[in-house]
Length: 158
Image (tube, rainbow, N blue to C red; front, side, top):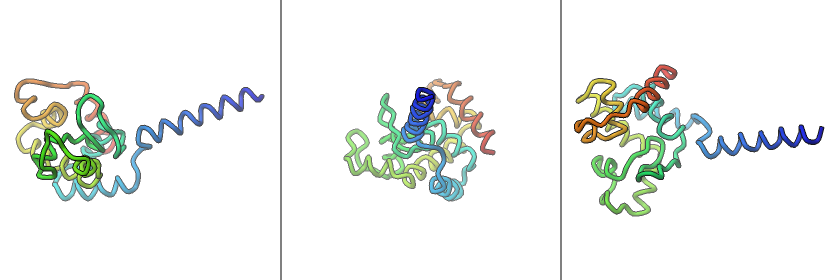
């Protein structure tokens, strides 16, 4: 009996720690920000939720170890620079990185970029260009796995 209880406790602790590490789902605060920012930038709220889930599982402190991208929408310093949020994309200061992590700024940059992509590209192209970058997309880079995941969650949140 003690072994069963201990097993249940261990499983619960594991699941709780995973929730903390991976963002714990969509909080009411993040949902409100997504609603406001998607409206402000004229992009589909369900699409922003889908990107957020795929990029960070709604974790505003997510960081990609493979490249410098941060926050809910995995915004890069270069994209934040293009938006005018930071001064030096090649060597951002810790204050600038904190700004990129800020959910409101992160969503501003991402929604601005997504709105821009959807003006230039078809729906699937815009989704893929968000992942590989506009110049990468124009050079022929694609990520069909990313596209399928975003479309799956877009359908879920629509």
